[in-house]
Figure (cartoon, rainbow, N blue to C red):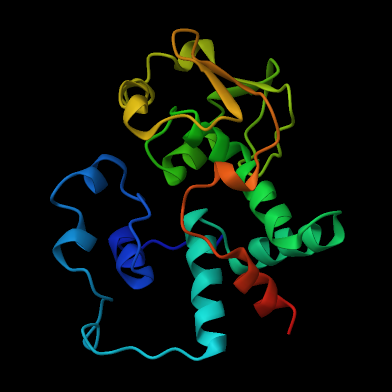
Length: 208
């Protein structure tokens, strides 16, 4: 499958937003957006002017890259969100938040979503006692996500858990740090998403 393999720091600079794609590095003075707070490239320090379409496109690209999705995947989530009851934009964000790789990241078992995706694919997690290695798996209220017994000695998982207090756990999840498991307490609400996202711009873009 096609996947972005270039520098993750370029994405943050392009979107002019610290997206914490590099984990611990983003909290240090080595963070690229702190050192060079302008878009990458030869003309990055120029004065950019965006049309209405350009603003909508940048917002879509930002959210797509935040969750590490391809265009076809992201469009699929949009169509599901538009077909569901409620506001399309909020439905879209709820579907993205309920992805297993995102939940693993949000619970603090991984430092980044990319790392969480890799851990899930390698079969290190159980959902309600069953092995699930599909990053896009949609968790439900009451689901228990646990690290496999043999995987609890993995250094990266333990290092991520040690730093979990710095990032915090969203209100819709509950973490049992000592038990290497977490529970989905409720469906994520719009208020649980703290990143500056204007989902209405994405809806306007796809509605054209």
